[in-house]
View 1 (spheres, rainbow, N blue to C red):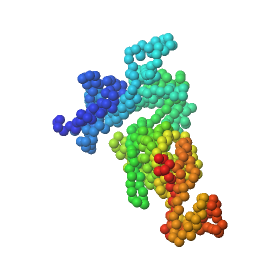
View 2: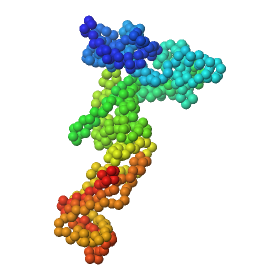
View 3: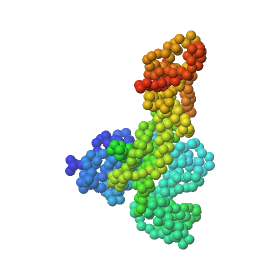
View 4: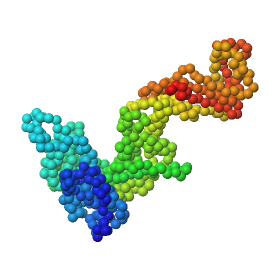
Length: 510
């Protein structure tokens, strides 16, 4: 039988243990499982490792059964408990435990764990009104103590508490499916009916005064409800989900696959709501029924060097494709089960795409200019620019990259350039005008331009204008031109004419 088990590798076991800080993943346990050479923890299988085991899934491959995604770190007692009663501990619950334990471990990282003196100090503070010392975990400990007292009132639920905008919020989660009945106050029947319909069909939270409902079986509501003028909010269960994007360009039949969005989904009878994130929550994807939207948080980049913006290239690539009329196809899995399979969806707000693409294009142009000129610039999301400034930065980049080139076919009229005759330079100028072969000309401009990138002024190198293969034409008698005069020259292009601009980087940055 042992040979048929798809056991975890030692590397996977260590990873499962480390991901939760060596603590049991069961929310109401979380005890340390390792001290010196003693280990009371187990890497338990969510789906059983062999046929006949708890929660066994025959459709899984051996690699999937022994992967880290199918494991959860528990103390020995709870590892045995979940396998003895698999109906009470389904796959979805174990995945939730695992996710919450990993999140707790991340939040605890670098923080002092409470000891006996913390409890004494807290009691002293409560009795005297004078804190003995600052305790970093004090607020967290108060919430934990509140949860414990709530569990004593009604142990059928698990609880989370928080305090926002002078309002205490208690979240209640049934440990298992429990039927109950409620009586609706006759003054609230219409309100309840409307909101309940939206809850079932569209997954909109049902919020109503606690005075509007009587639930005989709910001890907590009797204890803290009406006498504290509380509201009740009923929400559907959120389930972890993964959303995948496929971008498709019909013209070339090319596909591009984007990074997954991890989030949560709630399902109503008529619509579903999903909210997920990727790239460390820089990018948010929201889907309500068939409507989708995205949001981008650029504040996460504030203060960073624009050369080192995390995930910029991937985000810019995504919005460049959406702006370029690539189609969006969405797939979604819930706990490994497929819910949506490659459905085409359309972003309804084209202005949002245009604005985001414009901002990312501005950032990209600034990054490229800063790299060529070898300057460091700090990112700020609080930046505004005009269309003229955007175009100017784009022109500067084109010159730096050697793209500011014109040929004869690009000209509507012959260019006019102004040349000042230097001291004793008339003879050379006359040779230039009278030359029988096409001429070339390189003009080094005296002044230097300045551009602003993210509120930082950058002085550009001197600009050089080059004209190749043309005949110069003047509109005045050459014999009347004297040294020091400013002369207008019409550029008469040949077929292989080329006009270009460049910056004298080699001279100005040495």
